[in-house]
Length: 418
Ligand SMILES: Cc1cc2nc3c(=O)[nH]c(=O)nc-3n(C[C@H](O)[C@H](O)[C@H](O)COP(=O)(O)OP(=O)(O)OC[C@H]3O[C@@H](n4cnc5c(N)ncnc54)[C@H](O)[C@@H]3O)c2cc1C
Image 1 (tube, rainbow, N blue to C red):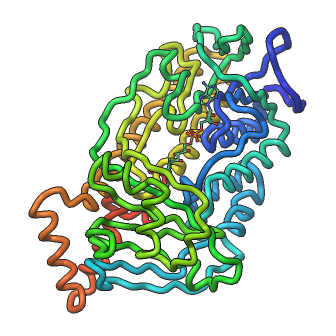
Image 2 (cartoon, helix red, strand yellow; image 1 turned 45 degrees about the vertical axis):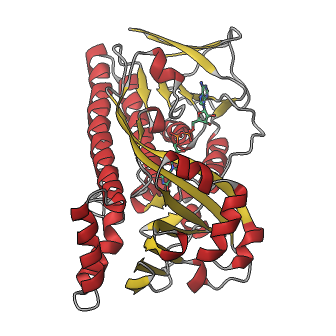
């Protein structure tokens, strides 16, 4: 593997890198960083311009397993992200406006990695980008890849205006609408649930106490928003209010700025009306690629190019980071292998393991979604009974608090399964 570490752009006509990464979202940036840490010469091709502004808090959590991964790729990076992010100081769950669960946490130990860091995705991306630039990763901005041609010997990525890049391997990290995935004939399998949500990002006043900024609140059947479910999830500098809507049309209405201004003061301090940063409406998708590599084992998929999950359990970006790490590792092994069959084997192992993880994460996120949806009488009765009994049987309150994160809970997720 080359140790070349130039900055600048890479286009047609120059000697190519060993790895192309398409997309500079969290999965692409992590792929590039992981590859660079392995001594792989990598170029990132990104459709958008270098001065783009990415919207919204989106993925709020970086779990400890991923903080460790990032620390390995770029020593100190995990700790830096953890130092910027926050952890919850309290979690409280309400049912019909009545508290059924509350737990407080001490201030985190700043000497070791916390179980997770909560910060906006744009902030996580900035840390990843800075680390990539420090590592000498090359970026080509304004390069929307339209086609990818894979052969037994390597890959060519092409834009519509005729520019092209070649490399032995390519990681497709170009998000849910992935042109890379489509170009190599990989399809997403699964479904779109009928669940639609509205997310509203709010900025905290600078003097807000940590006990308030770090409070995660989960409402079942909130009486002030016509019994819709609602999460309030803190992040460094603010909070995300996430409203579960009844239908697509309901989300369309509840997500209109004038409508948000009507219901928001009923669920948070009205002072936040002047602190709205972003409003998004989004469907909960549950899709996983049928394969994570192409037939020549030259293209590897990572992140939302390979899977789209419901947000419950924070598996989207976290599993994208794990995909990226595994994909870069497989490319490293394949590049080092003199035997083409061994090289293919390394890529196959990546593809099988991450397909399995994708299916697992999809099922877990779907289970969390089914729980909060409570789409039948049995599920609704179970929740309401648990709420009523929680004062005498606290574990029912704990169940209501944890069940939205999927079968085993997002934070207690077994190592290695993201
Ligand atoms: C409202 C909302 C809330 C969310 N909440 C959570 C959460 O709580 N937890 C969680 O884990 N996840 C959450 N997610 C999902 C999370 O945002 C995604 O998992 C994450 O952004 C996926 O990262 P990625 O790098 O795979 O793709 P993306 O972030 O989509 O990045 C893809 C990149 O590829 C570029 N690109 C696209 N097409 C091309 C092309 N043809 N050529 C070159 N470049 C291209 C794009 O410009 C972009 O930079 C949420 C998403 C939304 C919308």
